[in-house]
Length: 115
Image (tube, rainbow, N blue to C red):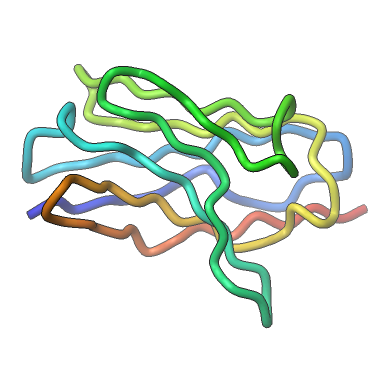
């Protein structure tokens, strides 16, 4: 069992930056692939960024070059650095920990990009 707690969301102006954190507890963090998803009102939940246990990363085209996913296995924490934010990045952002046999979700953190 893994418990995930996201933090770092908030209101930011277009062009600004935020860093989201996902703190994990309850299991061996390093074995999980960590994902960040987002869900805007009335839309489906979409995968934004992935980092594997080995540190390989992948990004949705819409955030490539602006977002950076990372992890600190010693701190059991995953991060999502978001730069050059746009109004269309507004959504609830969710952290997900996934292995071959299980998948866990955090409660989400709201990111609002608006002037």
